[in-house]
Image (cartoon, rainbow, N blue to C red):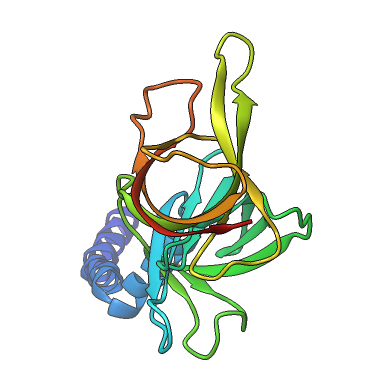
Length: 239
């Protein structure tokens, strides 16, 4: 008799506590603070690989567009386009992630400067928020999106010499030039290892050209990313 009574008391206690447990569980599930905390955890632990972009306005110039690619392999590439008739600045390097922070270490391609540029971002939902003062009081927030297809771009190119460059075994030679980019001529010259379609160089002169840079089909191998077409000869002067 006592055993049956104890069993009855335990059953009453069970049915009394069960609704409380269900209510507590439901409240936890619907609590916005709890949901927000779960979202934060998910955000901070998700992989940041992908393409991010931002456009920064400037009072005295057209501004600049920044595109950052983080690859699953740990490689990083940043393109900074000042949108002023010059090619993009290309930086390549590596990225790592620790406690929601993305650390990127890069060098600028073709600058001759081996100094590394280190940037730290905070991963917030689908954005990377720069942690530092290099981008002024407005800061820098890169938003994740689909990487755009390469587009044509108008460049201003100074040309002071023409020669032949070897494409490598089996690929023959091509025209190449000593060039500078932008409205104003500077001191340093660099090499453009592509012909400029429609341009005839005359030795002893320096040219200022307006050139259209056209993306090539990425399926074509053993050639550069772009081809160049003459749009206008802006100046021609004695060297």
